[in-house]
Image 1 (cartoon, rainbow, N blue to C red):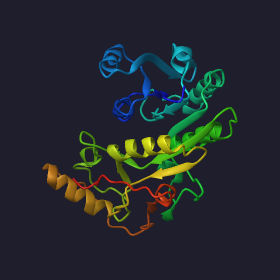
Image 2 (image 1 turned 60 degrees about the vertical axis):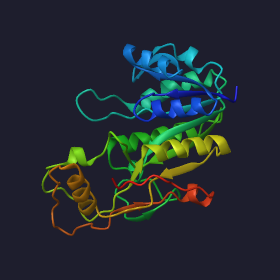
Image 3 (image 1 turned 120 degrees about the horizontal axis):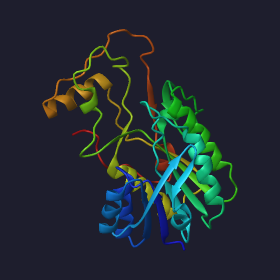
Length: 269
């Protein structure tokens, strides 16, 4: 059963991760919420399941998906912005009940550095969690649900802002004015490094741990986003000049580095 892995959430990160795992010889089951994506998963040789989590329960064959896998990777974003918000914690409670009925022994839960909130200075995995956003608060509570459950061993990865060839925060920030925190450092990670971290954890059996995933390059936001906008021919965002709370936080991937591993993909275009 050890070479069978489930990826709950074959989206922007989960799909290329599943493809990479198959390249490495794993048998991978994956979930999606749409019919057309089921065909995409089949094409990539991922065993597809249409599963949808909600705060009222789970739709789809969650039992079949969880059968005969030893390790489950949970990559489900909280999605707490906009009109159609749901309790992420309630979704995870329903999921936990199903996992407890299965033979899953290891869980890798994808979280976010949002759990550190407005902490200032250098932040490591040993730093206290101080979430200020609703998604950060619900991620902290969800992390706790999994880590305190003794039916399996859980490892948490807290990724910084995610970037990739087709995704960069500068496209959303372009042209915006009077943004705050221009002198705060950035905390980003490339999708390639996210996949590298997850596979490293699996292959080395780093269970019952917490890892931050942030590339070790932290220029000021106003400098970094100005340069990234210029490279794309986009209007750069502008920032307020006030100097209140100008420290910001630098998130360190201390636990990963102390085990002798490095992040390899630059966040500079």
